[in-house]
Amino acid sequence: MTPYPRPALATVVLDCADAPLLADFYRHLLGWEIRSAEPDWVLLQPPGGTGVRLALQGEPDYEPPVWPERPGAQQKMLHLDLHVDDLAAATARALCLGARDPGRQPQDDVRVLLDPAGHPFCLFLRD
Image 1 (cartoon, helix red, strand yellow):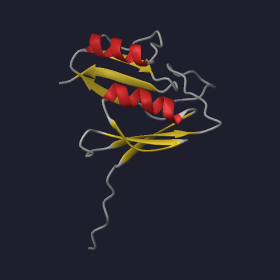
Image 2 (cartoon, helix red, strand yellow):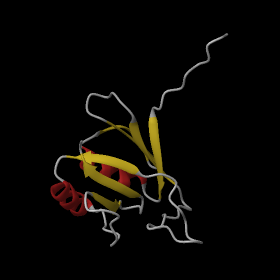
Image 3 (tube, one colour):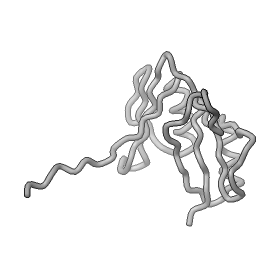
């Protein structure tokens, strides 16, 4: 049996209307570095450059998802789960950086927020 090539996840790409704006939000939220940037594409990487990267891709016809989901509205395709050590402090920081609270939280130990492009992301306590 011939072994097959095993892909490795390198980058998660989020579409948005304004790649530099969204990259700035995640750069500050995560403490990551800009690896490369073009007007409609910004690639972020963790400090030290190892691990999965995050890219923001500008799309002129971008439609933000709706959360919580509603029939007939643009659905989210994925969301980011972010571990934090202090849920209240991490939530406050994300809100100060431009995140929004959608007004509904699924449980007490998780905070769902919307990034400046409308993508939901979850903050939850590290195990």
